[in-house]
Length: 178
Image (cartoon, rainbow, N blue to C red; front, top):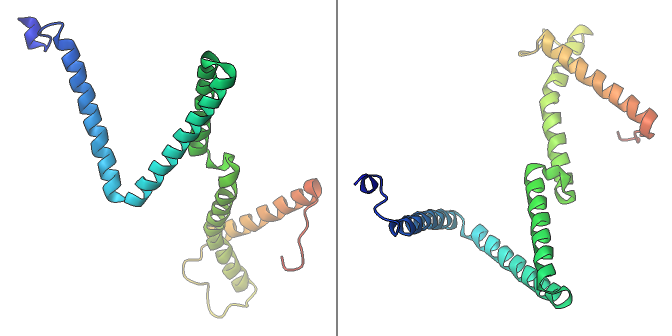
């Protein structure tokens, strides 16, 4: 009686429950795939085509390796290839800059974001310097603070130190437009 209350009516019920859980998981996966397809069918189609091509190439590779090495060594080679592919995918997802294809884009995005963050402080320093040199008409512009001007000064000082270090260590020089 206590088995029935806990859902374990008989040992034959165990496979039925396991199949029910697997069917429920499969149903959730299909539901997620359907929602992804409804949101963006073009992306889903591209992913399907890429996966089909990868599976075709993997099957062809496995067939050719089995012709030369035999089935047991083919399993070892296939598992090694899957492991290396999984590592590459995980590394590129976690560290996109580690893949040469994404490295330029990552560096450009970083450079743009850093310049956007520091440009405000450099503008504050410029406004403060103009006011200090009596070049500005009237007072200091709105939003300019001493702290912002000091941060702008710090940005320029850090850039100058960085450029000096690169000149001495890596022989970097500026051209005429720079």
